[in-house]
Length: 319
Image (cartoon, rainbow, N blue to C red; front, side, top):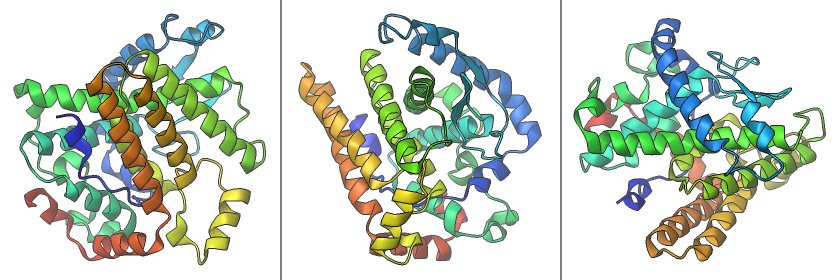
């Protein structure tokens, strides 16, 4: 059943960074802060148990976590580590939770999941003025999820919480890796930063494997962040895209990075003794491999952009 929860996803270019920031005002964030911080703290306690960490990484349990509304650079999805501090913006945590809960809501009701592709594409391509009320709408409002729906449906709450925790766990483990390896951030050439990102991805996937966490929710995270970086459709030629990736990109969610993660999951699937877990891991890896191919296809990305520009966000919940 969990495997079916992501059958409808096609990786697309998603909203500008400001979109998620403008969904939640300071009052909403203040009301949610205590709950979200508590949930993230619980997750951190599990991930940093010595039994799960590499033998020389026990000190990671003492790393501090900072949860500003947005990252110091103003990015609402700017998850990062800096001087031994892991920064997890509250706006990004809230958006990921809302996205996974809305996804679980539609799945539990047997509704098609394709509108998520369109919603996320609209966040990038459709101007805010053309959204209902002239304001970007969050996932729960967009898909008509009633307030407190998960309090009334244990199955819904279980699926949504699992997807959220899987996404958060991958992000947190990735940032802990930067601390573990003493990565210097963006003060080195882009090629080295990209190598550091791949190393942090591998650390995160290994850590999740040790905690027996299947990173299905991480796919939604990648889907929700890929638009913060240019893709092939944003540049005039294959050569220009290659130059950008080689000389300018630092944290791209691009085909190479996704393909590396896909290969890791496919190999992990082969190591499993249980058929169900192996099947799910293989499925996720194969889907990420397909996403990597789609991301480099300018024709597909142009089609996604066109549908987003001319689509109506208000229609998505009834699809």
